[in-house]
Image 1 (cartoon, rainbow, N blue to C red):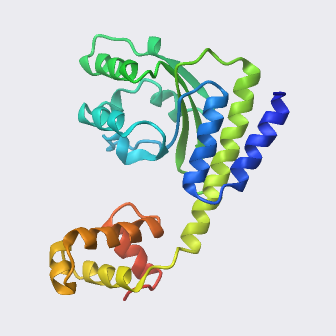
Image 2: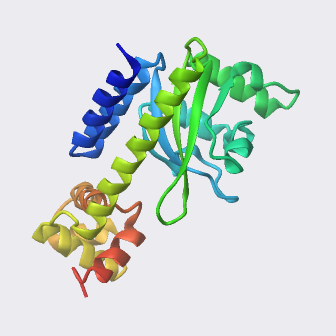
Length: 238
């Protein structure tokens, strides 16, 4: 397919995505179009971040890989992160870049190889609030020519713009919470545990956790503390 035609079609599909899962599905199609196996969006790690799972926003990388990666505490040993911290230019990498006598570095290379991840491309971008994000394409493919790099770079930046617009919409117009979800959040704001709330409402703690997880997803939060704070800020509870 002609480059401009492919870029236009993929960009239109991204723009038409109505949900995060659909957005990720289209971005995965972009990855495969350029020979990569996986794609992901992550927040650039802060100094105290130790886990990949804590900074990943969306990804198609297998959960098993993420668990093993975090069990070994390998985030700080990623050789490409220092490069993308100081540059907005796309950064390619391969297993040849992961060399050294350090046990952690060797472990990182071994883990990537086990999952068939032998090279990749990381495209840095910034949100409107100034936060640094990274769009990652990974797998085992032939090196991209400059034209292909330019193309995938433009698509990735467009994809992030779509994602940011989707996220801002979710923040300003959160999905409506059910009566039961609001009730569970109110009890949580009063310091009650899932087990205690379950006793109060005659429900299992598993059901209470399900209500809380649904509310966390609807309000685009990462944990219960943020959920309660946002619910209060939006005046959903008092």
